[in-house]
Length: 226
Image 1 (cartoon, rainbow, N blue to C red):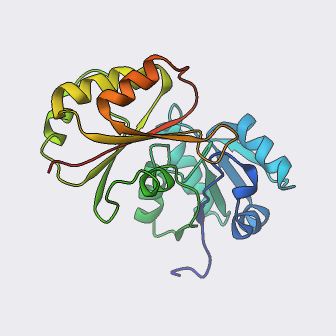
Image 2: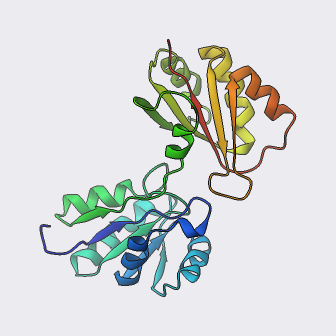
């Protein structure tokens, strides 16, 4: 470590079951000076569950650009920070990249704990090859959406997406139209009470979700081009 201590910890939080928090994550959250959270209400429930009482400050996509400088200054002043997201690993389809980049630029020590990330269990339980894959996160909502899908139609590795409930069917239909009727799997509510994985051709998944209530957080895994 450059300065003998860690200035910024990225701490993964449970994506469903609160008991998935690691012992090391609890220890770090107990020891830092300030915890930065995407949603303080959501994170407050977790901190109460693990009996951690530390100053909790808001750090989300809407204030990220405005507050990075302030938090870097706090760390340069000697305070240690932990960044957590609502669920999973910070900076994976969540705020965090800007803070990490600026901290590194300023010579601060950044450390990421291993822990929950939704796409890993979705990928390994999909039944599709997991030795080589590409993580796409959320597709663009409008501009560049179909262009991205057309580019991915040539991708030979397994492709992993995040998707929201109100956009899931549209995404499945567009993917089938653009990349073809490939094998796929959808993992929903990972590590929660109603966790399930649905596997089959994209056409079969479309039929399934046309007749089922679409609720929860979704990870879509699609086979690469053969």
